[in-house]
Image (cartoon, rainbow, N blue to C red; front, side):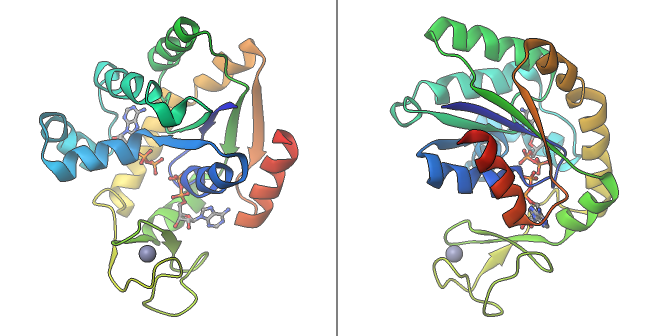
Length: 214
Ligand code: ADP
Ligand code: ADP
Ligand code: ZN
């Protein structure tokens, strides 16, 4: 199965992609995670994108398309993947179409997680993750079971993304409306778009996703 999950920052793409990954034996391909790894490693690409990401703007299409096309070819992606955070612009969507066509693959579903801007500010500013295993949490909506201890690995060190500030979220939401939301009609025309209510509780969103995918 080949899926695209898109929606505004904080809609729950990463959270749901991880759950679908386990349920359907897919790999999550998150361009945001890939870029953060490049920044952390200090690579040439990482140096180029660091300030763009911190400002909440989109990284140039050519850099993203290069990065993801190599990743889609990797052995672990052959059995199916969930694209999380890509495509984010019409040129990226066209590049994805061309890439898949060249490989004889077809997207099964494109899923939009609908969410309100105001709620996304609270989601993003309360987000944190485990330094050891990357598990994702939210101060209010998805806290660790024991305060200060990661449910998944027992780790005690947590981190926040450099771009998860109230100010940067505004810029990221703006970028979403200006550059990514036009993908809704792009995929609607192609006929494989599904829209899901991302404002529901985490488990309810998962249930809705599983209903449409089963
Ligand atoms: P995205 O990948 O779309 O930016 P995340 O999956 O990282 O979003 O979710 C953003 C934050 O909101 C995280 O801290 C996550 O735990 C929390 N979250 C995700 N989905 C929901 C939901 N349906 N209701 C409440 N909080 C949520
Ligand atoms: P979000 O929580 O906003 O969904 P992501 O982790 O997907 O965040 O992306 C974080 C940042 O990485 C974006 O604000 C942008 O700067 C960059 N980025 C990620 N994916 C893309 C993409 N497909 N095109 C352009 N920039 C991207
Ligand atoms: Zn952990």
